[in-house]
Image (cartoon, rainbow, N blue to C red; front, side, top):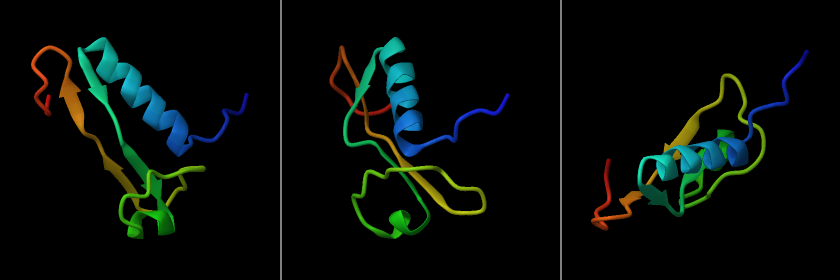
Length: 70
C-alpha cells in the first residue's frame, strides 16, 4: 500500500492539531519546501520533496496565558 505524499498543508494541520491538544494555538505557520523557502512569509504549499530544504516556522500561543512559546 502506497501512502499519499506528505504536503505542507497536511504537516501544518497535524502540527496545529498537536498544539491544540496541548493548550496552544498557532497562526501563520510556515511549512515551505524547495524554492518556496527563499520567499519570505510564504506559508508553503504542495508536496514536501526529498533532498530539498524544508523551512518550518511556528508561532505557538498558550491559550491560557497568551504567551508565545512552548
